[in-house]
Length: 305
Ligand code: PMP
Image (cartoon, rainbow, N blue to C red; front, side):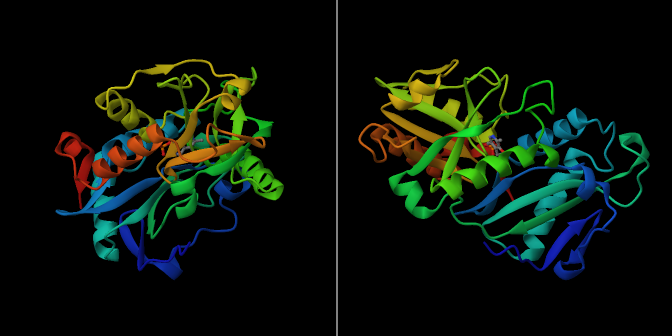
């Protein structure tokens, strides 16, 4: 992955890539005080368009509020314009977008009110997060030895940077074990989500996903509720046990970075036929049409740059 671009937007100005730095004493580095978003811009016949930009910016604001920031220096509307400007000035047709609330070196103790939130927006080129091969043929996952956050410890609805040490530990463990992705259970032992994706199961023609109590409310997940129902499938939110993973016909994970990626194996057990299933392929196609502006039904999801 090449993170380079011409400019990073920082607090109202476009800063050259090499100069976009933060001080060593930033409490964001020391205590994980930060909030981020992950968004994608896709090329369409009408030019580059950001997928569900407003929803992402609203979740960005919500994440900051959950962490405890009572106000941010920019509104959602201002940040939407800043994202579009950053993409335009960098000349990207397709890119990943990373807004981040961070703090400079003003900090006294662990009190959030004694620091000042700042905001940056970076953009970079990004292909398939779990690999083009994985998107076609499915990835291999394990049930992680790490548990997903308890909803009353660091919460699950905030994309706060500190929350992601949990994802980093689980993902690193999976890769070291030879898998591609980790499926994490909640503190009660039910399936929660992956390190950066929500999870869906297909069994006997019905599609199920987890309830949202202990997971991030994914924007891809939300989009898939509409797409799946439009395709004529029934979709249910329910508690999912580890053994239900093993007897699913198909499993797929979804997220801004991973888009829709089939899971072909869980804990050394083939999922269904051990390759991408037909329902997953159908949903992938409908999603790809939506993000690339090929289905007018979903045109309200695209914010042209
Ligand atoms: N769960 C976690 C833990 C994530 O980090 C992500 C990625 N943001 C998701 C789910 C999927 O969310 P979205 O579809 O909004 O990218």
